[in-house]
Length: 340
Image (cartoon, rainbow, N blue to C red):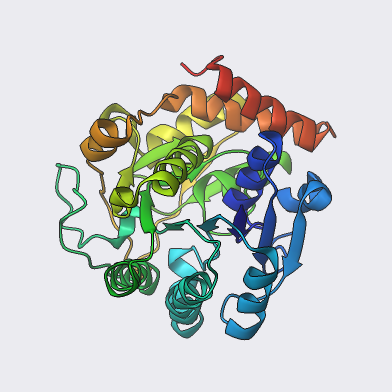
């Protein structure tokens, strides 16, 4: 198994899970973008082959893929934040579009590759701020450079799939939360940084509604999709993986709930900026296709997802064993313990 972006939040969780199930795992990614990082705290590189590199470097990437000879590739390497995409749109488009082209081209040249899961986002759709969830066959779009770049990555996947019969599926997930995320301009990491420091947190868009889900939910979906795709090219399509509709909550609801879970007088304030960049106000996915054809279902409700997230950061604050606690949560997810 090859994971691009293995030094990032989702990539580190996925790499630990793959190690846990006995896979031969390699990763290709830039160095961790944050300090601290889950990758370093949990020593994710300990039981895998870890290569520091840029997916925009086709020669380096192709050489690594050819040498490692993966059967399955999970492509997670990306510039994954909306607001930074306004600051540096060129980096966002080059990483998310050319990086996708490069991993698919490297895979096309490697006869051992049988399945590629390209992780994009729910934000790849042309968002009309409607109540109904978007289906996989609806128009792609994206207002901001990040969302647009992921729409482009979807088109790249479709082109390689149809032009070269490459077994590539795209996975569109919602707003992911969980322990070990320290990215800037994300709600839960901003809250956890502030609370660990004993400070209040400012929130930009308290009325916005998002499809929140714990990081293990989409990772479970990626693993299931990869297994299906490895055995049958019919699964080389686009797939939505989102929470139940009841778990699409406004930011202020989530902020209040996290403050209550954290305790210690945790608090937040409304810091709406008058001229801030556009961000979607409402977004929901229709996951009927994944439920019907893959047999995938979301397993954890939003209350449990928030509790697991807060417990992870409490363990970190108390200098607990990060790798052991992360693996403990993976084990509980596998067994279905404390998911609701």
